[in-house]
Length: 107
Image 1 (cartoon, one colour):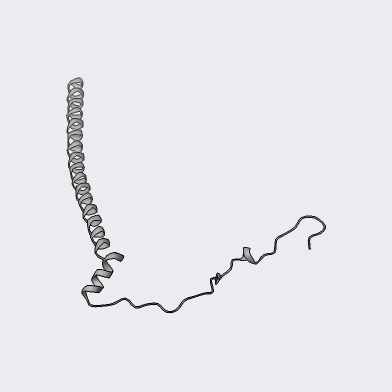
Image 2 (tube, rainbow, N blue to C red):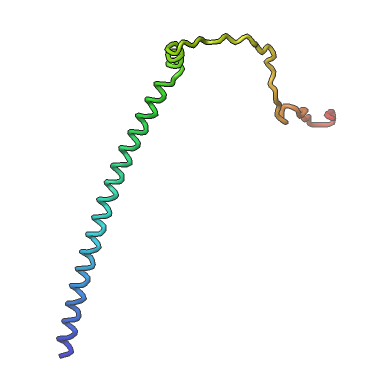
């Protein structure tokens, strides 16, 4: 009688294991399908974003700004201020340091 109960218990455990694996695989497949759908939507959104960025860059590029300004009856103003002083306004500490010399003759 004990052997029969032991075999029945082993068969229930075996069937339970099979059902648990089946449920786990179904859940994994559902999650995988949802993930692939999300990846597909993400790729579509990236393509749409790139197209929107390209259209924006084409519409508001330097060449088109002249065209837009002409359509709005605007003219380009001439710049009269010319900076003839071409020195660097800021200097780094490396430029300020005096070069170090080696030996007795350096200060």
